[in-house]
Length: 65
Image 1: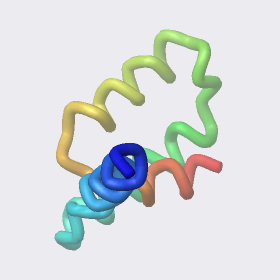
Image 2: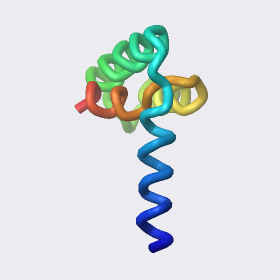
Image 3: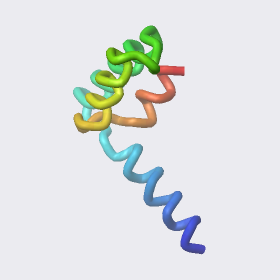
């Protein structure tokens, strides 16, 4: 039961940012991460920016794929 509640909270947090600016930034950062290898310094910095800024993480990950 605890695991299910934790997963639901995580999904709620990942989809919390729905402002137009947040979605646009998530889309742009996801496209950038899709083109850059993640195991480089540039990829690590871009991923840190995604986690630092208030962007929609789900959209970023979906765009990156």
